[in-house]
Every structure is written in structure tokens, then in C-alpha cells.
Length: 348
Image (cartoon, rainbow, N blue to C red):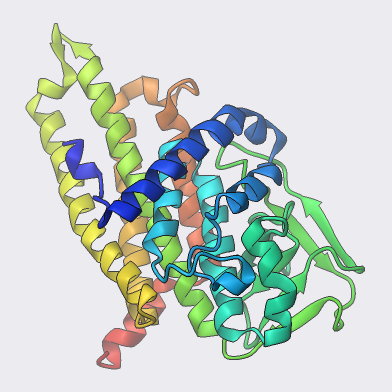
């Protein structure tokens, strides 16, 4: 069953990249995760370290410091390893920074703004996030962000979060993904030093947000399932491992089968995005599938843990809360069901 919860790497290059990402996460993420959660945000240093390893610009041209790989499965591996380490919050920050904002600048930024912004984003010296709307909404990663890609409304714009007239008000850190560094952003005045429009970027940016939320959510579903498997194999009930009971096996098998199916869909969408053929309907649909699956997997794992699942020393408690945060964040960007319905009824 554990094998069902894992996605294979398509090539030896992908496997080597994943191993490098796993070592990075073990050395530079896991030891600091509790401190980040207590502090309400990850450190900026984790971005510069990730950038120095080449993790943030795998698909960007070499002229900006990128790896020019042309394959978003590499970024997916970094995200999956981060979720496996227990940080859905940091995985979501990787996704927004490297999976949404950098591609938006590559596809829609002017040559001048690309030269100005991309090298620092790829090196991790500058941090970017995306937001559906900053007016009255807490923005994921705003405590760290130098740039915010605003995708709400009719026009997509870059907000320079460190500009004069822009104030960041940190949100209180709660149980769910506190390391994301959520904050309110107040823009007192908007001008050329504060906002830069990105033409024809709205649909593609929302498509990328949907895709990467799906990648994070699928990884979260796998981790919840693996936590349940590990617990069921070690927990003894009436003298037998919990894993030997038929009800346990059936419940986990159902989730494992869904994970296998969803993995094929996510991989299909990642391949399409790498080839620049992914449409907004598929991206919205895969997000809907993965987010709902992540919720069911976390619910099932918590149920199998019984009362222990509510105790903070058990990883499933944090995973359960983080999965709820991910679901709420997904709804905050856009309603994927409307996009799917629009495609359905337009015959696409």
C-alpha cells in the first residue's frame, strides 16, 4: 500500500534531482520547522539556499540564472519532498513563487521587467507570492514577499510589497500551516513604483495556481495515507496490528486507489504545462479532484488514529489542520468548479 502512495520519477535526472531536494529538505527545512511555526513564517534564508541549489528556476532560461529544463516535474519533486517533511505551508510558498510568479514573468513580463526581477527571484534573494485579492484578505506569504502577483479583478498586476505606501500587517499564527507567513496588505497609494501591470496574464496565472495547488494537495493526500499506514502497522488492538483488520485495509485501499488515479491526472497536467498546452478547465478540474482527495485522506487517517489523532505530538493532527488550510486557500484564489462548469457547458 505504501508503494501506491508514491509517484515514480520518469528519468534518472528526475530521481537525482529528487534526492538532492530530499537532502536539502532534511538539512534546511526539517530542523527549523517547529521554530518557523512558532514564529509564524519560514526564514528568508531557506529561499536563498533553495536558489543556490537551483531549485527555484528549473524552467527559466540560463540568462536569468535558471536551469532551462523545460519540465515542471522537477519543481513538483521539491514540493512533494517538502510536504513529506510535514510542511504544506512551505510547499505552497514554493508553488506560488516558482510555479506561478516566475512563469508569469517569463510568459508575460516585458524584457525590462524580466531583467530587473527574474535573477533575484531565481536565486531566492527576492520572494514572490500570488493572491486573488489583497483588499481585506490575508495574503499567503505576505510577511516575506517582495512581490505579490495580484490575479483578482480584470487586470493582473505585480505589487511591489516593499514600496513606500504599502504596509504589511502580520496575521496571528494559528494551528493550520502557520509557517506560511500570512499577512494583510494595505496599499495607501498606487503608482508606477507600487504596481506594474502584466498584460494577458490573468487566465494563465489562475491556471498555474490551480495546477500547483493540485500538486501540493496530492502530495498531502499521500502523506496522510502514509501516516495512517504507519500508525495502523504499529498500533495493536486486541493483540493484533490495526493493519490486519479488514475495515482498516479496505478504507486505506480506497484512498490509495484514488491517489493512484489522481496521480495520473496530475502528471498529465504537469506534462501539458511543460509543453504549454494545459488549459484552464483541466487545471481547475485537477485542483478540484486533488483538494477533495486530500481532505478525504486526512479525514480517514485521523479516524484511524482515533483519539490520538487530535494530539499535537502525532503528525496527523498538523497534517489535518494544514489540509484544511490548503482547501480554504484554494477557494480564496478562485472557484474552480465554475471554470469546470464553463468548460462543460461550452463543449470544451
